[in-house]
Image (cartoon, rainbow, N blue to C red; front, side):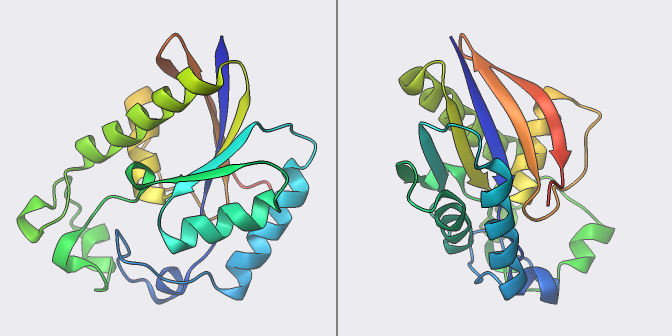
Length: 184
């Protein structure tokens, strides 16, 4: 049985516009972010989903609820959250881009590898429960980059807001079906 995950990064947020580190902190969707989610809803409306899931972060929840429009059940999981950046959250993200790290535990945050694995484990668990069905997932840029990087070590980009990729899960193994692309 193969589960197909249609994975979307949340819509644009206020922190995205201000170039601030989000992580586990939250920031509301901007009007553009809401519009992106509305356009994504139209784009994927022909696909039959058994379930929609997102992280518990407001930005991911709001994106998911805007896309699903109550057409199918939704669930929220903490383990689909963004990488935690600890005390750096809310600060300027440009220094992180100039001098990237993969471990923020010294600031009370997370290790990127562990964050990616927590998302992968959740996807595999969902696949075991839904079987040969389509699932919509809304999550976050950095942690999704880690998931893709585990499936393709050459990949190192951040997904644009409200872009979508596909990952299949068969017999507990994840495989990348399509890279992130902006559909709207």
